[in-house]
Amino acid sequence: MTAFSAGSERASGQAWRELAPNYERARAREDSLDRRVEWPAQRDVIGDVTGLSVLDLGCGNGAKVAELVDDGAAAGVGVDISGNFIEPRPGTELVQGDLSDLGRLPGLEDRRFDRVPFLQSFGYAKDPVHALRSARSMLTEDGFIVLTGTQPIRYARERAEKNGTTLGEEYFTQGTYTYATGWNQNIALTKNTYTMSDLLNTFSAAGLWIDRALEPHLLEETARRYRTSRSG
Image (cartoon, rainbow, N blue to C red; front, side, top):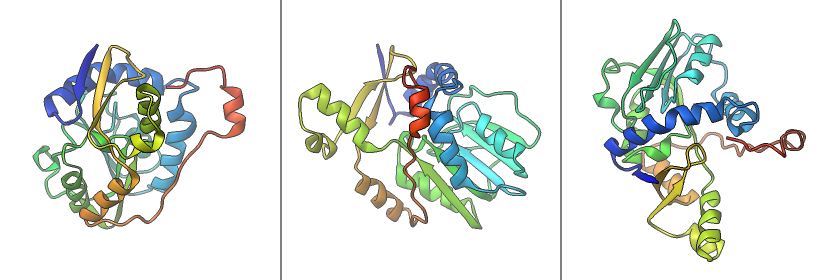
């Protein structure tokens, strides 16, 4: 098994170049959590994009930002460190680069965007506060950031089961956590542990406030339909 740290730009890029095809195949499955839970909730929060500009930070292969353009966005830019992109559609730009340092990305100088989503990508920022401040500086006057991430209790539960400890102990544990990905069992990722208060304090430190919070879940009907499937 190969382990990669999310805190290293080189390691993160290498990890995602290897993981990206596996991730996209899992995400495209009919029973994937992204298709059934995450993307519908993300799309609802992003809202009507007609005539707006979108900067998708950590865009994966770029399919979601392309869909937003199809839904009426005037322009869509996707940034991802893997460079494993779909063929760009008219109105979309896909840039290989690190979301942690937007100021170094070519073509984004002095540009402003109405929507800046971090869709399950924020946990890979080397300096979360800096990443949010950079994104904030690129917002239009009425624009907003959409940030989605994994509920920290999930990783706390996994650590408790692995270590034979309690959920409370692991939830408040400081440090890093290394785990095998569900997309490729031969590749492990290392992330910093965090609590919800850590995340809220990060927003505050970046000069942001939360306008709306949502905890999406799998509908019972969908759960019954796919209860024998392994979701990606």
